[in-house]
Length: 194
Length: 194
Image (cartoon, rainbow over the protein chains, first blue to last red):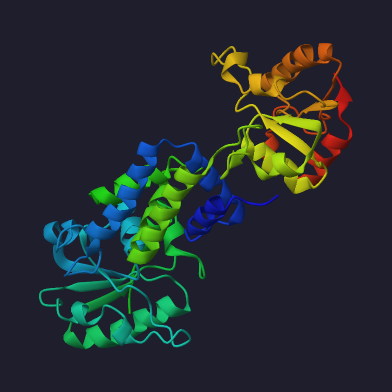
């Protein structure tokens, strides 16, 4: 059967979303046909609104719709939790086990993918260490995440600041984003000095 | 953590898609942040294009971007396969086991939900039965689908047209949309006279 072009084009857009395959994308595209014009307009407006309002916090690099994010404005800066991506902030916040501030690197060190320290949000981390007592490195427990943790420890420990790593309660090779709240909470509680 | 409003609004839109829960919707919304402006514009354009180009075929009620769909234009009208929704046409076309034309009811009879024959695309079905030798009723094998099949059989058989039902190779209570091609193909092949 010849596909209707506009449906195929929309399905291709949906399949750019994480975890969406060809079949799911087609289901989504077909569901759009059943939406009202107003609903589609609202969908578009919401897409554009996200792009125009969400930016990176000037201090920590997390998503915000202001210039400085709510967490930077309200949390104590004595403990800084360093994560690779904004979604990891959400994961840790969902545990309720941490009440300090965050710093988002937007990636991890990866010689394979040519990601060097200059590509990560590290300069701004070094610039905000004044008054910080502990830096908790909460990158994924995989090769790149470990390498990033070791790199940060070598950089920050000489400044007399404690650098810790979340405990390997999370199994090696898995993704922080999918860890359940209890596991992630324990990993925070059992963090070890680097 | 306070959610960013525009992300929450977009996630609410994504959760209107079939099978998308709160967590998945948030993942999709976060993925949009990482898209370029051009990609978001293209996404919006694709959404609106589907709404503006896709309409219902004047003859069979299937989706089309013209006035009459490609299947109505090219297929023999001796056999008509009656389905509840356009997605069911796609499912049957994917089996390759049927080369006749279709008729889409846009629903099934449901006294519980106040859906009567007048709410379905049945008038246009009755108007196109001239020259039709067989009507195959391929609604879901559940209570509503069976009721619709029996209703159509009572309406059409008096006109001297053979009315058949796809075989119950598909297990009772399951959904046509998700049947694998082999099962659906066998169900078409073993259809029984009503």
